Length: 115
Image 1 (cartoon, one colour):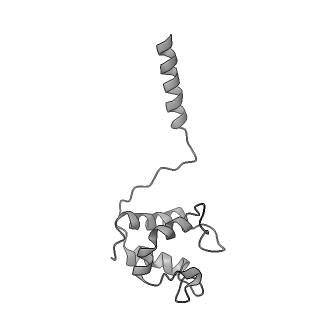
Image 2 (cartoon, one colour; image 1 turned 180 degrees about the vertical axis):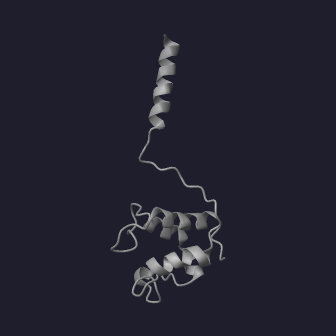
Image 3 (cartoon, helix red, strand yellow; image 1 turned 180 degrees about the horizontal axis):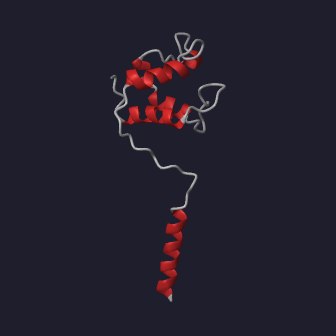
């Protein structure tokens, strides 16, 4: 009897932990992400626009160069993911597409190469 209670308890825990529908699995970074071809166009279109994170350095950050984007990559990822404790970016608009965020995430995981 005691063994069957333990087995049932373990089964309930395993089933409950495998049914988290709201948590998406982390996507695997298959393709090499290029800063020049993939990341820079995202930053240029959504971040370093006039009056935002361009030469005027709104919010104290300028994202017009590889060096500045690379140095702030983790913070960029946090704000575009709309993580708690960070100001959601791009400011005043909706969250970027998951595929766009994933490109930046993969670039970071791949070592933030200047390629």
